[in-house]
View: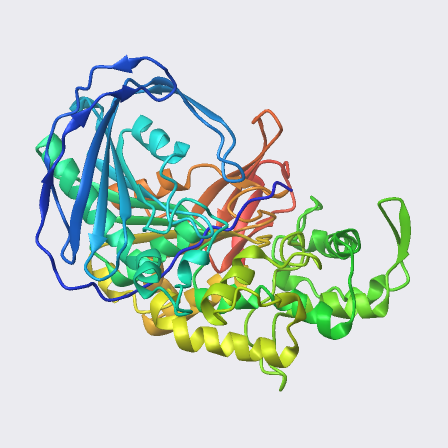
Length: 540
C-alpha cells in the first residue's frame, strides 16, 4: 500500500478589526518553471485589495513560459513531477498580515496569461497534515493546464507538513491567530484575494469557483461550506479530517491500548490480522477480490488468530490472546474508563502502519496533543493511560471544537447559496477514521431533513479498499472533480463515482462505480467482475 501523509485543516474563528489596504502588482523577471533561462515578464499589473481585517504587506508577480514544466520533488508529499502542455502563466504572490497577530500569510494565485486559455473557473487547492497549502507543488500548475485560475495559501504556518510547533507560543500558550488562520480564516481570505485578482487581471469575474482538497484539504473544504457558504459553487472534499478536535486525539488510541495492555506487537503481526479479516469477509459483497467492500459487515473475531504462527523478519512469532484483544480494541475505537464510546477506530482492513507503530505514534495526533492540547512538547504519548487519554480527549474538545472542529451539521447557508459538496473517502483509510465522516453525514441528515434532501446538495461516496486519499488495493477515483463540475454547471447530480484499478503503468485493469452513501455496489451474479456494469447499487 502506498503510504501517504494525512491532510488536515480546520474550521471557524472571528476576523480581526478591519484594516483598509490596497497594493498594486508589479511584474518581475524570473526563470520559467522547468527552464533556466530568464524571460521577459509579460504579466499585467493589477491592484490587490486586502480582505477586511487584513493588510497587504507585499506583492510579487512572476512570469512562466509554460510548455513542459518540471516540479522538483517535495518528499514526502510529492515526487518530482513533469507536466506537459502547460500554457504560459503568471504567479501572483501576496503576503497578508493581521493587526495584533504578527503573522505573515502567503497567498499564491496562478493565472493563465492568455485570457483565451482561461475557462472562467477558479480552483483552490488544500493542504496536508500541518501544511495549509502547497505553494510550490504540482497542484497549481496542473490546474492552470486545465484552464483554471488556481490558488492556495500557507496560512502563515510555513511549508512543513510535519511541524506543528507554530501552535505553541514562547509563553506556553496557544498561538490563537495562527490556529485561526490554519483552521478557517486563511482559506476564506485566499478565496477573496484570488477572485479579486482574477477579475482585475481578465476584466471579468470568476464564473464558477471550486475547492479541491483531501485530508487537511478535505477539512478545509468542509470549513468553507460551513463558515463561508458563498465562497465556492462546488466543494470537492476527500478523506476530510473533520471532527478535528476528536479524531486528532482518537488516533493515539492504539498507543494507549499497547501501554495499558502491556503488548508491543510488530507491524507484521498486525498485518496478519488484516489479512485474516479480509480472507474471512472478502466474499460478503458477492465477489472474491481481496477487498472488504463494507467493513461494517465484517464481524470476524481477532481471537480466531490466537495460536497462529507468523514469520516476521525471519523470526517466527505466535499470536497471543493479549495481542488479539488489543487489535479488537483498536478496531472498536477509543472508550472512556467507564466504557463510554469516545470516537471511531480504523475500519477493519485498513493498514496499521501509521496508527499502530509501537515506536512512533501517529505524528499528527502526537503533535496535536503536545503543542495544542497539553501544551507540553515533552509529553510522551506512548505512556498515556486509559484515564489520562480520556482527559486529553475531553480537553481537546473543550478548548478547540469551536475553532477547528469543522463539524457544524447546519449547511443551510451553503444549500441556500446553491453550493454542491461532493465528498469521498476510502473504506481502508488508515489515517482518518472513515466512520467519523459517516457520523458527520448522519448529523447533517438529522439537522436538514433526511438523506434525500441532503443528497440535493451534498453527496458522500465510500470507496472500497482505498487508503487515505489514494492507494490501497481498491478501485481509485478517476475524475471526481469532473463529476463535481458537471453537477454544478449542468445540474447532473452523480449517482455513482467512477473508479478504476490501475496497474503499475497506469493501465486500467478493472472498473467499478462507487455508489452514493448509504448504498454499496453489489455484484449482480453475472458478467465480468472487472467491469462496472456487472454491479448495481443497493442498500448497504
